[in-house]
Structures are given as C-alpha cells and as structure tokens.
Image (tube, rainbow, N blue to C red; front, side, top):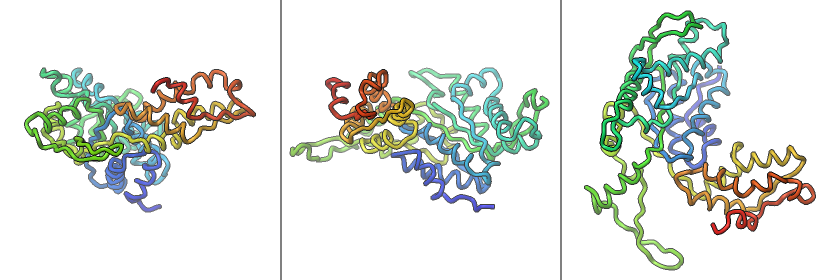
Length: 356
C-alpha cells in the first residue's frame, strides 16, 4: 500500500488548481495529511471575498482524495450551505442534512448494495464543506438572529467530537444509529462582507485609531503617503465576535485562514491556465467549430486589469469581463476568423470594453 501523502505532496496537488492562495493551500494540506493518517484534525475557517478560491479549493480537495484508491475510506466529501443547518435546527433536526448527504455520498461511492456498517464507517470519516458560514451570524443589524444562533449551535455539536444519534433513511432500513463525529473534518468558508471595513474603521477612526500608520511610496515618480491595510495583519477574534461568530463556535477552529484578494499576475494565470476559465471554454468552442482562438499577451493583461478593478468579485470578474469581450465573436466565429484563426488582440479588448 502506498505511503500516506505528505503535506508537501498534497499542497502540490491542490496548488495546481488553486492560484494565489498559498497559505490556504498549506493549511488544508496539513489538515488532510493528518486526516488520512487517521489523526485528530482541527477544523478550518476560511475568510475571503467572492472569487478568491474557496470553492475551487474545496473541489481540488475532493478531486485529490478521489484520485487515490488508498484514500478511499476518507474520501467522502460533501458541500452544503450554512443556511440549511439553520433551517433544520429550527425544525428540530440539527445536523440531519450533514449525515444525510454523507450517507448519500458514501452510497454513491460504495454502490447501492453496500452494507450499513461500511456506509457508517465512511460517514464517520467524512469531510464537510460548509459554504457561506457568514450567513449564520448570531446577530444582524444589531438584532439577534435566532436561525444563525441555532445553526452555529448545530455545527458546534457536530464539531465537539461527540457521539451523535443519526436517523437513518428508509433506503438503509430506517431506525437510528450512533455516529462518532470525532473523525469528521469541517471546513467552513464565507466572504464575511463588511468585516474588512469594520476592522479598517477600528484601526483608523475607532478604538485603535492611529494604529495604522501611513507609509511613504513612490508613484509615477512622485512621493506620496498611503495607508496600506491588509486584513490578515489586523484581524482579531474580537472582530469576529462582533461580526456574529460566537466564542464557543469560533473556538472549534484550529485555523482561521484569510484568503488574499487576487492581483494582476494571479488573474492572468487563472485566465490562461484554469480548465474552467472563460478563455479555455471559449477556445474549446472554437475548436468544436474547426477554428482556433488565439490571444495576445497585451489582450490578456487588459482583460485581467479590467477584472482587477472589481476586487470583491475575484476570479469571477474575469468571466464577466471576458464575456463582454468575446460574446459577438462567439456568435459568429467564422466571420471573425481568418484562415481558420481568430487572434484576440488588445485593440479588440479596448473596443469591447469601451472607455474602461
């Protein structure tokens, strides 16, 4: 049997899919290395704007585990929205969605004839991604948010390494079973809209006014002073408490990872290298028509610069910008191609984006 993969090996596999987030990749690689070795694993909270790579990292983890037969017993991965936990907690079934989806995923992997014991073993070693965990805040607009409180409590129960009673579905014979949740790994992610501004205000005009000092920079040959603010440098647990994450809930995470906003170079790499990028999809469409789509380096950077102006959208801005650039060409590719090739240049991008 192959040796258990090292954190470096896992990070290499994940990093091939996730660009510009080395810290998040490293934390996930360490957690997975511990998990596949059968050790206790600390849960992970990821904070990052839309399009920075949270979902991409989740998919990369799923693909890595599925690619190795020796990791099969620990490859049961599910994703669900945090609001589902709140809805089920309100209905008196906290955590039911987590185990239902883990059971369904285990049956997909093992087959419909798998024994109950096999399925429950897979479930007890599963990996659960919870999307938009920032939507289950304990308060919103200064008012208590009962659904969010109950959802956090439901997750807390599952993350406390307790034996949890599970109601089994009819296809598994019904009844109940006790599942030891200590082998589960939870990775929760969210954009945490407003957190950046709240922390920035704290260190500029709030209780820590003056903590953030301007730095001297040279721009276009001129000396200027700028405030350089990175959330990772200033975020404290108190900020997350104020945001609506309860201390008991936050204490269950061994790692809080802040994903960085993507810069120009990262956006260029995502645009050119990722198989699901707008450019790769459009190139495949051209090939299906017997044509070739090429793009100049200047055009690539022009598209990336336009996307960079929408930092809250991250890589998603690339698809939106590229859609505007290429939509007319894709409607009539034969009209635009010359000798079977269409070269997308910077002038075409400039015209398509107008004054941007």
